[in-house]
Image (spheres, rainbow, N blue to C red):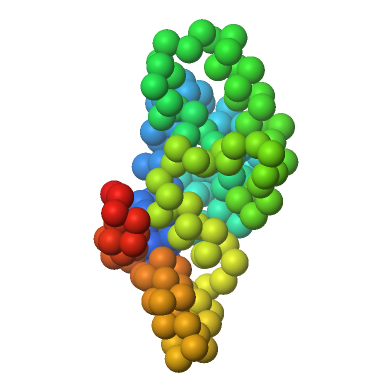
Length: 176
């Protein structure tokens, strides 16, 4: 494994909580789709999906694609998903495929597509789509004196490790 490949997998671990290959394989299994079909639902080319899965690329750079990933993860995590009729599954996949929403623009009149997803992962993905870890750390330094709690949130949720972010979130909300 090359240094760049290892680094990409480490970045995926930091940004997404685990390598993207594991997340996409779960979706492929739960949705009973081929990689090409999943790529079509997400709005990616099949080679791009393969590169993300293998760690040749580190980041999902399109927020709309990331939003679709989160929508699919929430959908397959719903109780009763396995008993959903094939026609209904296909209808819902078509909705995700057509979704133009991103993690940055959610219609307030509609339930957020990622509501059932891991809230810490959603927060981390949003912050990491907006800025690099170094930029988030820089913003936190600027906020240290006037707003120390906000500075800590940026550091832990934006630039910290997922395990630390989960502990921080649990401490703040009293939830896991």
